[in-house]
Length: 77
Image 1 (tube, rainbow, N blue to C red):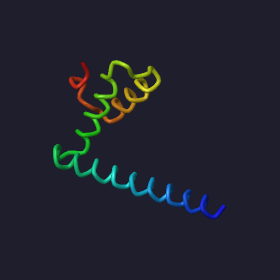
Image 2 (tube, helix red, strand yellow):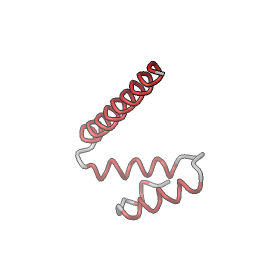
Image 3 (spheres, rainbow, N blue to C red):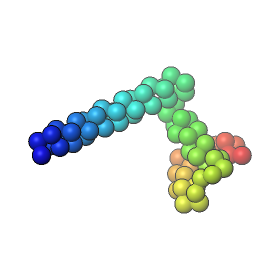
């Protein structure tokens, strides 16, 4: 029982660290390659919308966010 608790705690801690590192590196990459985070968000949403195997529900959600952020429609194919 004690080993299970230790393993569970270690997995939660590892997940939190990995998530923090992923978000941190995403922000750094967005700032490095594109000075405007708005452009990075628009590029990501366009890549989701343009992906050929995306489900219709995800495409609709990404399209609504694309419109909310007033992204450039030329990013869509």
